[in-house]
Amino acid sequence: MTPRSSAAPEILSPRQILETLVSFPTVSRDTNLPLIDWVQGYLESHGVTCYRHHHPDQPKAGLWAWTGPEEEGGVVLSGHTDVVPIDGQDWSSDPFTVTERDGKLYGRGCADMKGFDALAVWALVEASRRKLSKPLHLAFTYDEEIGLLGAAPLLADALPHVPKPAVALIGEPTMLQVVSGHKAGIAFDTQVNGFEVHSSIAYKGVSAIMEAAKLVEWGNAVNAANAAKEPQGSDALFDPPWTNAHVGMISGGTAHNITAKTCNFLMSFRCVPGEDPESYARAYEAEVRRVEAEMQAIRPETSITLTRLFDAKGLAPEKDGAAEQLARQLTGDNGSHVVSYGTEAGYFQAEGLSAVVCGPGDIAQAHQPDEFITLEQFEKGEAYMRRLLDQLEA
Ligand SMILES: [Zn+2]
Image (cartoon, rainbow, N blue to C red; front, side):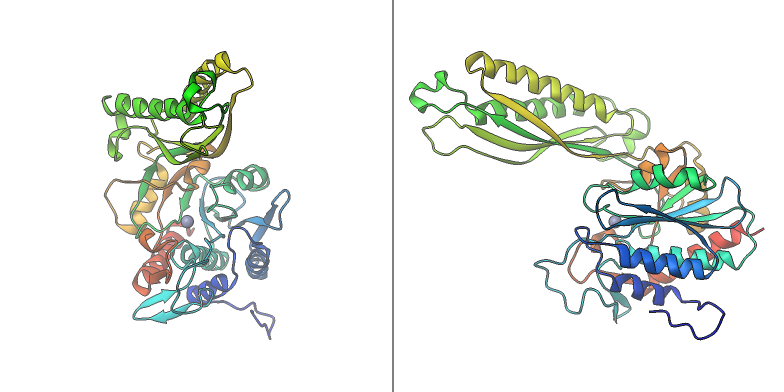
């Protein structure tokens, strides 16, 4: 894809890099290795140091790359390499070929988030040609779209091998606004195993549905109590400014006159930064065990099993955070923004880096058919990278 005829390595434009990245159909369920191979080969051809993190048991990899002086500090640009599927979506052009129409670049991932990824690869190569006072890093993850699964293993594996950066810019599409906070999320698959009897003698059985309803109602009570609390600190920035419990799916039962043998539902919590998601996990589990004890008092063979589905770290707004200050300088955005969706930024913050979310493109286009980034946003993203390079220059 990058034919080289002379000794000097080829330098690609951000647009050419975007076209290449989009051409790899890195849907989360499939491999991302061809994309990682290409990025690593391109960066190494320019003398950028790369460290590859292998997925423990799937053909996927994360990539950490850096250039500049071998010292701590500096900035890491981070993006995920996976994209959501195109199944069932009606696209006007090939999703894996960048197509320009009416000032927009169409293609899966153009907004979320190969546009930023391409700019980050371009910036690393530019940085390798300048004399930097602080290193510039790149961190590419896998499996972001299936529950933010790739950032923690990449950080754990790569950080001991690289000079630790001080600031992380996670380039999810924010229209280049500086997003300094988002909620944490945790979710549980809850399987209630009841005991079937004819409903005329329901008291001798255990209806999994009616027991599940107690737990759903517990979620409603949590919400009512939290809504009545006074929001603390930066929690007040969020809408709503409190932690909320939610059941998004429920199924169970077989007939109107049989106590349900099973009921399955998903309980999730979106937690404000001022509250510990684990405290909600413990409170929910305690309530599950209380309901289970009531069930077992009637039928000892009944049970409730809990499976944790995801555990997404929140991003707490930092007071005078270095990442926020830098991103404000790069974008000129002086507002305070928090968002309702999760990102990998919280994993960088948990490792002691100052972190914000800030990238080109609009989240409204993410995951849609005919996903696009406007040329204007992509060019503004390039200007953001140029300002970053100027800041890092010695
Ligand atoms: Zn994304």
